[in-house]
Image (tube, rainbow, N blue to C red):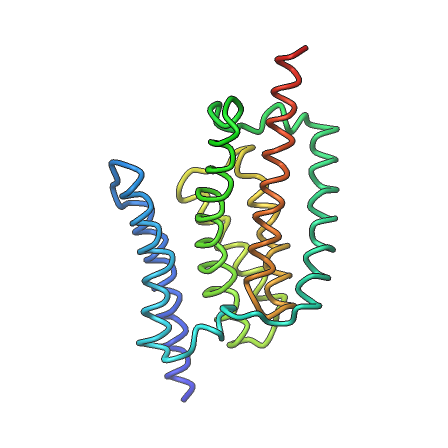
Length: 219
């Protein structure tokens, strides 16, 4: 039994690493291929592995309502920490002067809504499933330690950003959110609340950034 556990453990690690690596090296030429590749490597591969190899229901990996009260409570707690971090970064390091948003969402509200709902929401949902769902809950099930699971999925997410060369001011919110979203998912036993926390937080940051840019143009 111990041998089987070790085999499954390292195979799962290999599947996670392979999915992220393939996502990095897969060549895409347009937005459709980018979307298809991201769905394939961050959603379909984990789902097929969970259902066919692990033979477990997706609800074991955060795909459920979970504990509503804890989800809301920890989401609020995490949002306060997130806001405090970026208030400090804005005051001390001019975060919003370095945080880049696409120019077209500044000029057109329709594009802003499209980007925040369909683009940001879409990719955040996939990240939540892969890192907070597949990764966090797999390791939580093995080690029975939420803290270790939260830390591991955070490290894996940072490694993913390093792999795709995305360490910059624009991805900093996602880095800060990784452990906070992990905490919310672990405490609520669901990725629903961690997704909502991540999406609303990014939406607010983008809205503030757009307002600052518009105000500076008006002045």
